[in-house]
Image (cartoon, one colour):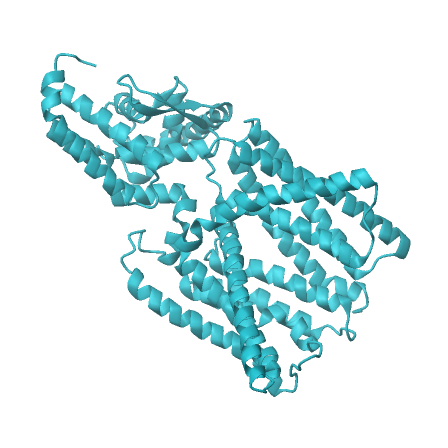
Length: 117
Length: 468
């Protein structure tokens, strides 16, 4: 299934934040985790993750530190901040509204809902 | 990592390293992607390639796939540019739609230069046309009131036109843009000012501030609410100021030499210099400086941070020395009007330095000694401001309100609020309790306050003080 560009972009922030809420991580691992969680359905162009991470950093939702990878290379790690956790909670509420609205209206009438409502 | 494949990897390492080096050099050519970002992307590329090699691919195949997955550089640098607009802003304004590849730059620049020169000539003409109707300038005489009143209306509308043309502002936007200028022209020329009225000079000065921010509407293509657009306009304003000062300096030298060589052969060039070259040059340079900022961005780009780096410590030192001397000698601020205006100017410079330092700073850098210095500068400025306010209050309670004193007081309060909250935000940033973006946002959110205050002085002050 091909997920639309806008939806991918919109879901990037909550996805990254919630992955980081599992613990500190870095770009490549985040993309791996997204692929894993979505069963490979959600595909990002790898490089596009970084501008999003930088935006989150600028807004103070995540904090970045340079560290070392297992092989000793420089690597930038990202960690969720307190305000990032708040943002995640607010995003969760927003997505919940979208999700439950979609379930109640459109998808039910089209008989497309996978869980049957 | 896995030891057993090390030997075979070593053999194929060279093509991979070469590939990565070449890829990196392509990445580094993108203005929007800085070295640290390239480091981060390279780490990603290497990790991806290593994983693919471990899954059984050859190094060159792994490299190709990893590069493909990281994405096309054009798109990538556009995304980076969108996020880090401070890196790209000059690019975005040079060619709004060329997506940062600069393809259409060559032809655009010549056309733009022609438009800029034409508008500068138009501004020069605008300031001389009133002479046809009897409002001429004379050597050794005060500037006629008509010129004082309309000082910002000769050049700023044309500057707005320049940006409206350059950004291809939509017709509705152009109408909106015209509103403040028309309103200003009508308001200031209909007011029955007394001869040599203080409120007239004040109104003219503040009209410039208000209309300068109106030009920002055209600069931001109507998206004046947008925080990044506002920051870009602040950067533009700072660099415009540098260019304008440089042009003024050159113009001064030129005029001085012209006067000298012609008086050497017994001619008196002053009337020509003072009534033609000076006013025409002054208004024309407004447009030319703006065009230069847009077109020759990279020349100045490195100068702004250097200038703030030099002058922030110097001004902090000046203020510290001043406060120290006052405490030591116990002398208060004299209460002459010029003194108060001088202190206002000092605070304007400090606020400008802070604003400029904020706009030139990479918002993602961790707090450093320079930020502490900024805080010191602000705190010193606040102390000086408190003293100046006290002096103004004393003067007002003694002699009552006058337009100049009230204006000085208003400006002081506005700067006090700005610098006070900036200091709080700086302190929170230094103790890592707030992101730097908060400071940026505070400054850009504050911009309309200046415009509103400018309008108040233009519209409310003259009737309040009986147009005197």
